[in-house]
Length: 257
Figure 1: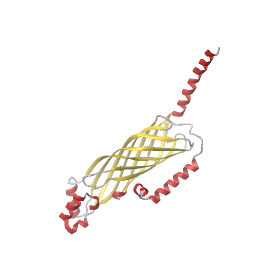
Figure 2: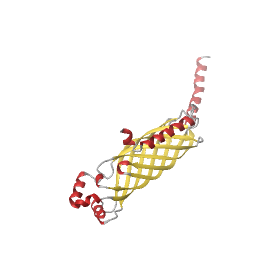
Figure 3: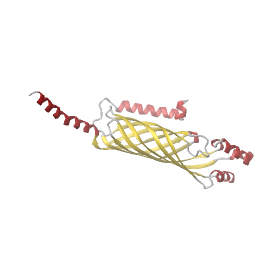
Figure 4: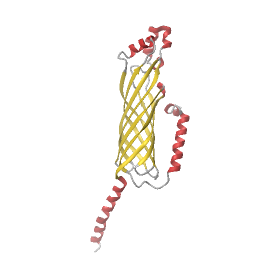
């Protein structure tokens, strides 16, 4: 039940997780990564799935990260995706359903409004990395941010056109809401500066709460190249340790003439 709520297409999800695990076992071994760049930039393809609304959107995903430590970073996350679905009365709050039944009578069963949707997500926060494998970097993060969606109804008959005029008189609707959830994935490191990133985020939000009855969980899949550059975070620690050692040696020489 839990899997079906977070991952409605659980068989495909389990296949994907099994593939990722296999890639980790093949590509990873016990040597820690020697280079950890100060900065990361990711640019890739994304799919946004909202099962409750039968909505699948595809688009672009961007991430910019700053590695404060080898194991922790702070980053900005943005995605934009588009798709379409059909709004039927079962998505509406009960009071709107009752109102439409009273106004439309038997024609109520014919209400179905195709809608084009564009969704943007914005997030800022920490991410935690595990770098004990040379060829694979594992990471996890909380997902906290805001989502903006613009929906444009495309009614195809007079009945649904009249319904849209009541629910969205301007011909479109736009809404902002906060979201929360979690995410994670892995980088397959081709070189020390380039990797292939595969990641998933699961978040909850409630858009258009004036006309949509319930909030929903949304799953975002993403894949693409990630680029790592800047000063070696791991090397900077080594430099600090080396610079400290002469001081220790000097102190010991003074104490032992």
